[in-house]
Image (cartoon, rainbow, N blue to C red; front, side, top):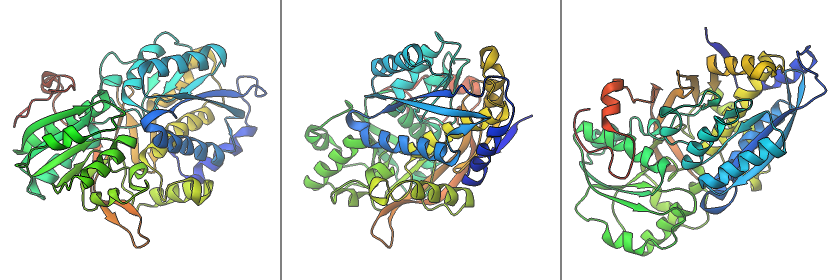
Length: 422
């Protein structure tokens, strides 16, 4: 039976009350949580908001759960697998953490999955990294992911732009690494199954500063261009595309239209108004749990030190931290016997997250809701993702039978092929 928890402010506050419960371990010893988060390079701004999400959950719980205080050690990464592995090794071997929350970026997640297998005594809970392979290929028994992956974040978008926007021919641009491969995989699979065609696929390194050659090579005989860019890369592209007089219809990958881009300096982001996208949240959703999370986020940090609403990075780290705190409360802080009780709780948790209910499959990968959105300008002049539709219970095979899904191949520059049936 699934254990159900509500991770809003009201329930997190109950965790503090659980501090008086008797525990199976010495309650004077804190639980050490190590945080892996990208605070260097092109994803620095998203990483900073990821930290805010984690801190909001901990503040609401008064930095304690299951009768034990929570001690946090933060380790910066730069999106590379090596930096993530070095950071995790430092947290585990030098700092002696019990739990690792993170990382943020896709290829980092694959590296931490592999590292987690060498440290079965530590539990790893993904921050927000979204490469498919992290949990779909050779999953780790002590690695848990409470966010749907990049392909799941594309659910509903391909059909929407084909049927509602009448986009039949699309070219894609994406950062050349595992998460964006996964994002494009999800979009192409659904868009082509609906009848669309992908004419060109362009790939750029993370941290690209000059998009001039890519912009010049973009085809002018397509209905729209899909942008799989994020962080500083997204802002650089928009500035240069606007300067070049670009006029094409745009489709946003999840991190292209995230709050970390929509709140950036300058006017280039105005080009995103009206752009359809999809991802694990919608800024304007009127669900009470989402509104409660937005208020907690806003109340936790000065207005000058946060976005108007939490980015998907903040929500991802918030959910991961909430899951850890709630299961620590359930097991009364008991991390003995290889953290068996704690991991059983995580495996069977139904997380009533602010962006919809989340459960885990047999690979400890999230099944959850996805949101099709469009960028709008609000009355106060800020940009936000307006909810168009919600797709519930998106699993990792995107509703495709497992054997047929496996036959597509793993996400890469050229996979999936654009075809109508899978």
